[in-house]
Length: 405
Image (cartoon, rainbow, N blue to C red; front, side, top):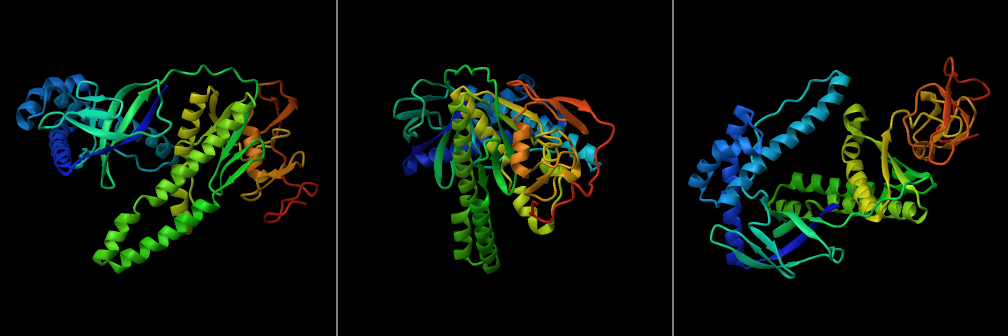
C-alpha cells in the first residue's frame, strides 16, 4: 500500500537560499509550460515533453530530469483538475446549475517541487536533494510511525509555515484483508462527525467551538487591519484545520480498531457531491462547507488497508429516511436532525444511529420497500415492494422537536 509521510528538513540560511532559488526556477518553468498545454489541450506527459522539453532545459537551466518533472507537474495538474471538474459537473447538471469549465492554471513562486529517485535519495538520517547549485545533504526528522520496511516512490518538497518539508510517498507491504461476514456501519454528519452501528457517536461540539473561536478572532483582526494584526493572522492560519485533521485521525483510528477487533468490515456512505446537492441557512454555511467528511473517509480507508480491514462504500441515498428494522422508506420518517420514527412499524431511534445501522447492511436501499426476512451474515435484508408509502397516521404521529413518545 502507498501512504504519504511528512519529513521536516533542517537547512542552514545558505541551504534555504538554494532551495528557494530552485523552487522559483522550477515553478517559473511550470508557468511557461502551462499556457501551451492549455491552448493546445495537451495534457499528456509524453506529448508535452516532445513539444517543450528542449525549450524548458535551455530557457530555465534545469537538469534533464528536473525539466521532465516540471512538465509532468503541469500535465498532472491539468488532468486532476479536469477530472475534478467532471465529477462536480455531474452534480451541477443534475441540479440544473451552470457547469464549470477548465481554465488556465498558474503555479505559485514557492509551490511544491516533485522529485523522484534520480534527483533525491533518502538516507537513514539525511536526504540528498538536487538544487540549481548541485546536490546538498540535509538532516530530516521522521515520525515514530515511519515504516521500517518501505520504498519511497515519489517525494514533494514543500515550503510551509516557514519550514521546508518532504512529503514522501512510501510503499509498504500490503496486508491481505479477510472477507468479513459483518460490517460496522458508519454514518457521517455535521452535528455528529461519525456515528457507528455499535451506538458510538463522535460529536462535533469541540470542532464547532474551535471554528467559532477562530472565526471571531479572524474577524476582529481583519477589522483592526494593523501590521501586528496581520502578523497574528498569519500566525494562527491553519490552526483550525490542523485541529480538525487531528480530530479526524483520532476518530478514524477508533473506528478501524473497533472493526479490526471484531473481525468486521467497515461500510461508509458515498457522499461525493453532497456539499453541492444540499443547501443550508446563511448562518450555517461556513460550518457546512468546512465539513471534512472526505478527509475522514480517506483516513479510515488508508488505516483500514494498513490493518487488513475491508472498506465498502455504498450509495448513501435514503439511508437517513429508511427504517433499519423494517426497511420502509419515507421522507417523514426522519422528523428532526436527531429523531427518527418509522411510519410503517413505529420503530423509534436516534436518526444517526438508525442511518449507521442501515449502512452496516451493504447495498443500496430502494424507495418504498419493506424487509420480509431477517438477514444472513454479510448479506442485505431481502425486500419486497409495497404498493405505496404509508402516510403519517394517528397511530404513527409526527414527533415534536426532539421528543420521542
